[in-house]
Amino acid sequence: MTFRIAVTEDLDSCLELRFEVFVGEQGVPVEEERDALDDSAVHVLATQDGAPVGTARILFDGATAKIGRVCVVKSARGTGLGARLIEACVAEAQGREGVSKVKLGVQLHALGFYEKLGFEAYGPIYPDAGIDHRDMVKSLV
Image 1 (cartoon, one colour):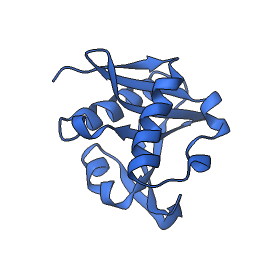
Image 2 (cartoon, rainbow, N blue to C red; image 1 turned 180 degrees about the horizontal axis):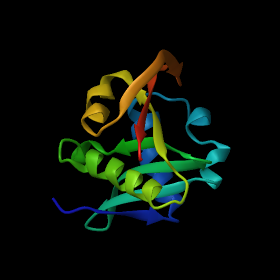
Image 3 (cartoon, one colour; image 1 turned 120 degrees about the vertical axis):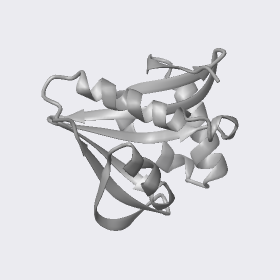
């Protein structure tokens, strides 16, 4: 499968994917899925043959890049797209002067996936939109 992954201004496509996965599949309340941080985030969009199939957003705060709202549509899961999407976000963070670490809030079932990509879990388990999460971090230095 051939995917194109790039920073995008196409927020509508990103939001449609997020609503499909988070609201439609995982039952996240609509009012919790979209927030004011979308306006200041860097959005990354993955496409296959021009069709949106995955997205993530990156928030920059000093030396930290926080990746969030990571999702891949069902038809593209198991293809390696999720890992490529995270790698693209990490590369975007590495390209920013002064950014030394990347953080994520991860659903518990995905901890192993992110560990394979070099992230380490820390801190307690906490609920986010009714789903248990744990924070993870990856050093860029």
